[in-house]
Image (cartoon, rainbow, N blue to C red):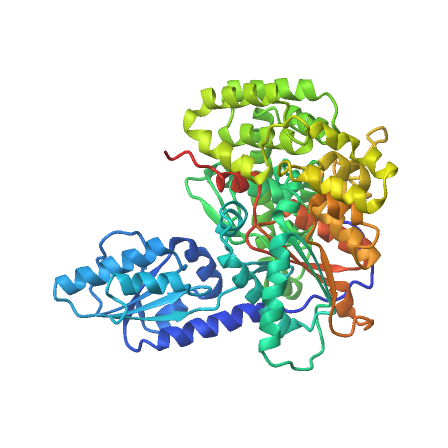
Length: 613
């Protein structure tokens, strides 16, 4: 059932060290404010903080009460208040209001603001403007990285995607560079760094700057190679429906900080249950990367094995029974509980997906990826919009159509846009503007048909002239070259042969054999070629900013050379993580995925919505 791994797979470094470091630093910062204090925490820091230091740890360090930042007057009666926040202007202004309200009421308290992962000058400027700079002390908690599992690390910065790619705000680039620097100082030095995308290039430069400023220590490397990739290099993959188990659980139940809340429909009771999804959960670990069609077969086999293990106790004497109860029973009961939860979750997924005509939806997606029956696909999308099935789903299909077709024909664009706005409201006009800016939903411009001739032109003139012509074409608009990339990299396997999802032959299994994720294919090709040589056409179509830099001792044949750190700037999906795990097993690599946040089609598009007019 599980994919057969190469026997010589290297061992992954111990990422729990990252947790210990940030926990110790937080305790140190809290102790800087001696005595009892109340702690106000930014709402989106609640879940990450819970993974680092639980309530009892905070209580041990004289935190009296915990509150969530809610941007309204506070009810705390403590004379010491600590704020643990992201560096956002709105939150800092609220803190200024709290301090000024206390001053007006004649209350004297001590205030400490801990910014995480770093403080920005703009935040201090607000404190100064509001006249409270001298009343508060500020500090930084360098909480850059949260290990979600043994091979996944998140910066937990979902706003990175919108801020960087839509607003052009590069303040988080330094944060990403610092995160890379931390990994380098703990598990480096890195032998090779590859990257593609403008943000990746800036992150690399920020990291190099920090390395040059710090002192170099000779160490035995635990991570050999690093690959940085921007989310806008590949928008097709996050727009596709996920069909591996972990991806489906994320799409339907929303995994937050490595934890999922299963509601009454799964637990068969009035209560919801929070479950940590990681490699410690033996049942989940074996099905997380599997195509959903294989999951029920595996779970029923697991149930039979569990029953056999329970049946062993029949005919045992007292001594054997004692050993069984003390050593095995607890583990079996835990496994039984998790198994029944995952069976219920799978049934819930099945009900939801059959209700929504999931097969028809997947067929439409596969046609879009292959470039077949586009008119039928457009009719399906129109019906989806007019039936008002789901605002985000309709938008996702529109974007997938646009990105795979290199933009929509003007008449299709106008018609689909008008139907969408009639169905879901004219306040989505700003959303369409955002999507156009990112090249996710665009109208083909007159003259863009020339792009079809690019390859022919390239054969007739020398390479240099062809590059100039291509640059002129690509400056017309920010657009996708998915068809050309798909052909060049063979992203869509030939559909004439049967694809056995039980024995996957390539990374396409994560999309039912219909499509190999572009991001993962690029990583595979660069590692295979040891650089970008031979991929010039691909980087040109992506609008490059690619780089490959050799660092410390690249010829070292240690296990570290087969551990590859892949950093996704702008988010990464569970499907891509599954694809990289598969690639690692095939090639004898181990991948560690670092991402600014875990994303999927809904999160990606919700970040671009502007319908609150």
